Image 1: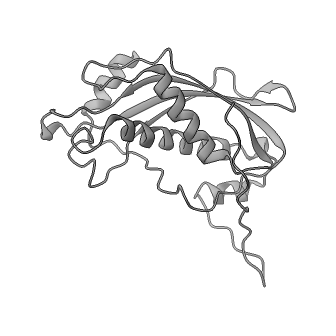
Image 2: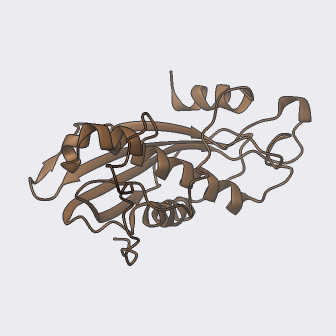
Length: 211
């Protein structure tokens, strides 16, 4: 299925589940020895459908880089991972579409992760990730009615950055991190605090600079 056909379906599937990066502002999740190195985003190959609001490659590159720094910039584990992200396609719900369609904004990216110490691309071809905007009072009738383009893009970019983090936590061996701790950080299990103490929470550090 081409991206154009996929987006035509996504634009109409208003019942499809969507993630919402509501944990921004919370203490950062444990990520072992992770530290973000390069933060490269390419938007020139993005596809969309006629129904969508339009956005330039530069706009996508800026908002996605900002979301990645916001998500990963506080980690200083010392083991550098470089991110390369391509914006493969998007739909930004427009105003004026019948409410019954309740279209959702959507974003498709491919993320490649480079282990700087090993000088190794961790997964050949990268990982394709599809995210939709979350469902809220602002998006219940389609975010084109309640949000401008910039707000839609920011929400999608944040959801994509969260999905990238979840992807990293699926591979605790990359992070030199115990499997149980990674599962807990991803929300899959609960890890009990040691007797007489509290579960460790990573201290926020100075933000990284996007590359």
